[in-house]
Image (cartoon, rainbow over all chains, first blue to last red; front, side, top):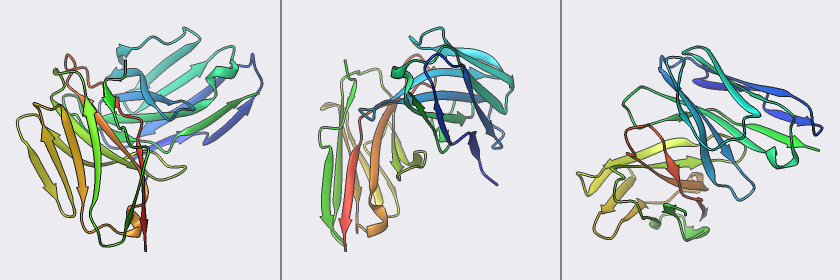
Length: 112
Length: 113
């Protein structure tokens, strides 16, 4: 009965590869987010989607492309991975208009 | 330009005592503030929040205080328990109603038995 789930939990890959992280929520929320936690532990928003529509797109390289097939899923595809992409990526969800966001367990990405 | 700051990277308190975690912000447009708790290898878990129209919100052992004039909020945990040991993040929202949360860098709380 996991509320917000992410797969995979760990991802180790080589520079230049393309990888995807999946996120699903069963809370009935209509807004989903991707955050990145870097080596300095800052959590920074990358994207948000509301009902499959892109709402927030922070200054993120266009190698990162979110895709929302439906309002319960928000996947993150990363092309041409770089060393600096190594981080923990968190998915979150909320109801539109509500401030409280619920986070997934994170995906730990290591680019070698 | 860090808009939300938690200036204490760590805090250690004795079980049963009060823990006070602090957070400062710079943007007066923020109108809602949240505290999240994070255990290692897990995602942040929502703890408590406060709207800018209030100066205090209480939920069991957790109380958040907001001082808008000082752009400062604090989280009080009393009594502290060993299970409270975690990283606590302060977050702020309200920028053009985007749902965007701006996080502080976190404070690691250790509660000693």
